[in-house]
Image 1 (cartoon, rainbow, N blue to C red):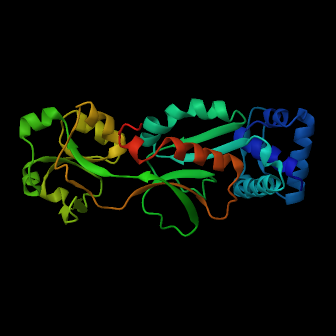
Image 2: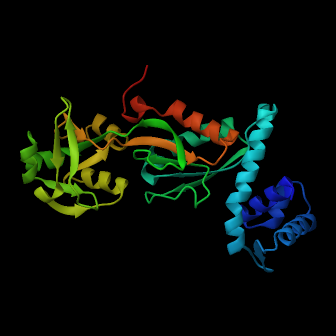
Image 3: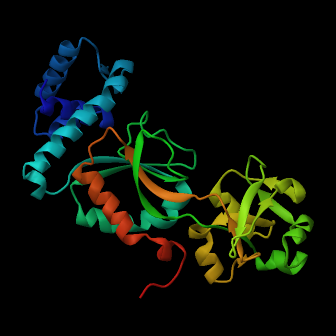
Amino acid sequence: MDTDTLRLFVAAAERLNITAAGRDLGLAPAMASNRLAKLERHLGAELLHRTTRKISISQEGAAFLPYAREILAQVDAGCAALGEGTLRPNGTLRFAAPCSFAQLHIIPLLPEFQSLFPDITLDLRLSDTRQDIIEGSFDLALRSAPLEDSSLLGRKLADDTRVLCASPSYIEAYGQPLTLEDLTKHRFLSWSTLAARKIIHVDGNTASLDPAKMICRTILDDGTSQRLATLAGMGISVNSLWSVAQDIDNGRLVRVLPDWRLHDQSVLWLIYPKSNVLTPKVRCFMDFLIGRLDDAKLAGKRVP
């Protein structure tokens, strides 16, 4: 089993096109098909279903794909260690991230990244539903949470500070809360669990923020929708500062009880499976994001 054939299989599985995958590797269509057939005979399993109209990955192929990617990652890392790291990073990088964060902060940076690293193809899976990084065969993912999974490694991108805010129109209609007790008289845009969460004051004192004790008529499970509902004047909400910093700077939103913030120790992490070698394509993408996104920039602060 040679690595060139594994690269062919991975490319064909990702593109669902054997001819195109073979062309990328300099192989004629017949040669590409023959190599894949030989790999399947060696493994004793059909990896790709072929018809005259389309290609699809089989159940066995889907199970084998993450291992094929891992083998290639190990080989690439070994070559880099032997001095081939001077070559430009290349290949397909599978990256999962929350949609709302990616739209605001990652997508605008991608033209620069692709200009710096033209040999890397980005396969982005953007969703506020958390992706399983191992089952999904992702090279890298962005998470906002304490890093507790022992099967994952990560590098901190920035703190995820979450604050209370509302629109000026809401404040004009319902008044500005001055104490925590005042919140019981206000409309609150709640998270889906409706569970109470701890908040912390700048002096270190903590308290409970409980949607059940407020007027809670709207429940949202999507960060972007929550921000838009807040801008529309539907109530007070808790939002990540990276999501609303520009709105606060521009006066579209105002901080409510600005000395308080959510106390959940959430951090923006770039994570990858512990079993994976940190390949050049992953390392350069991580370094790029960390170099351009930090606490000051995500909080909307001007950096000299």
